Image (cartoon, rainbow, N blue to C red; front, side, top):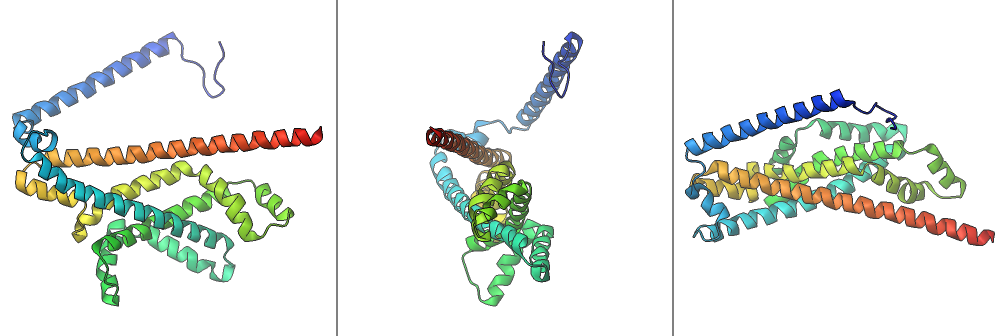
Length: 288
């Protein structure tokens, strides 16, 4: 039997305790779920009238309801994609600016980052929708939401990217400078790609936050899936069922985003392995 480097393998007694604890937790969770279902049933929240329009295609309300929700879901996805793209772009530029900035103006970049980090995202969205029009920037409500989300999330991504660059060995940049690469080339071709791969889990977590934060569009009357859900609730009086379905939609979106990130990370890893194998083969052939 080989023991782990970090901890010893559990013995028979520890395995029994772990099994008993798992069973106890499972029983408690099952009891809580049963109590929730009983309470909902006692309050007529599990009836066909409440759930039918949302899950039963034969219900007369199903098609118009999901047409309405589909419009909101499409707007949510569009806003999320735009906010992700702009947040990644602006965040990367801020991270690079903070790294390469001279001391005499670095304080300005740091000040912008720290200011926006401290502002709640709901305030950023509301500020964009109320202040920008007073300066003559009349845009659709969607763009105010995108600007607010970008302002908040770009500085978070900037700190993630900066941490990724600083975590790389100094020899990476020094080797690039030694072969005559310019500073912009070192950042663009050597440091940033490695930083993105190293910080990919943190970046994906922040992108998931952006998807969830699109739900704040209802405060500026943006027609997203949450806003459409409120219209459904006003007509059908089923808030528990509607918000449950909206929550499931967000879970599915975020899970799909996470799986896409895992797939991308695997492809990048395979590319690195393939490139390393090709390089070793070329070196061996040259040596022969």
